Length: 416
Image 1 (cartoon, rainbow, N blue to C red):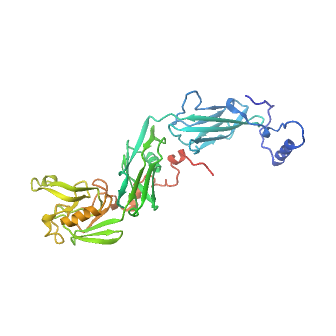
Image 2: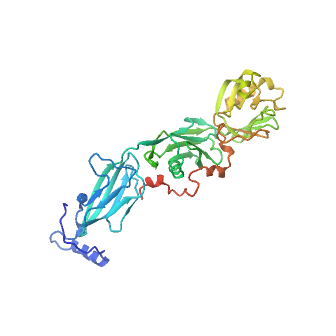
Image 3: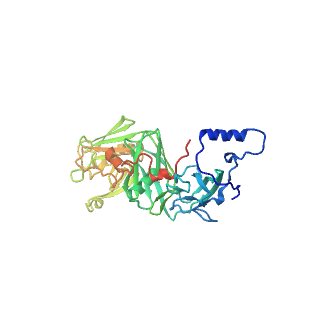
């Protein structure tokens, strides 16, 4: 070592009296340098410790704990801090005898870290060593694609996250979910729900606020998820909402009431599905707007019974439910249900509706004899699930909302 060797002494903690006396001795008089080891400049502890990531051009394995070990019997480790490039601490444990420090949380893959080690020799003289190292890149990455596309939507539009690989293990799901962040202004609480092993949806308890800004991003990059899988890149997403547009479709009264921010702005005579083709009940979210779409009887099992172009068509299910112009049924609109499941209205009203709504706006059907709108397999039926049930689809629902998941532990914020 580069420091001056001293004779061994017992490693007893100094009492307050001894410590004060020692400090006073170091400050008194005009004599030579103090022999007090506490006032000594820290020596380079490079020869006193070993590090599991040492080696030229060697990168630490993020799948293994980080270890710092004291060499020999002439010194011990007194403190270790490890931080990433953003200054976030890595948790670890130091043995009582100061012989070894070991990280207790996963390291990120492909990340830069700084390790600061404090030691003391057998005489209590302080040593220091700072080590910069990088972890090796992950071989298997989990990438996330957020949806929908950036832009302005209605207040019923859920946020989606599509994973590049399936994630089944509950603890791994918790890591993923904790790292996917959704922030809105005005602020509103929401929860991710696992639709399947590769798909998550996010929604608040009620619809989004009108004229909100929603920012979605991932903190998953480099985080160990489990089974050799690490978080990869994810492009952030920004959405905004417009006015709160809700179209209440009452199949019993054959009327649609369109509200803007809670105020009715138009009541439209309609016709919905006839018996055997009843329109689905429940909340639907507008998926697409098509000024013209071809509809055929063959698409619903009726052969060549009809084949026509339909105009001002606003789509609400992937199976083919639309709100559209139906000039052939104007005599039944407001009176009877005669369609094959769509909501029909006059051309004038259909064009007004088409130009008024946007993707993500809400269409709610009540008093139909049809089945209930399914939650995920036919469009965005997310709002038909009760809030408590929705929350149970979160991997963080079972007592993991305390921030103690591996994702949080792997990247702690600096203490202040």
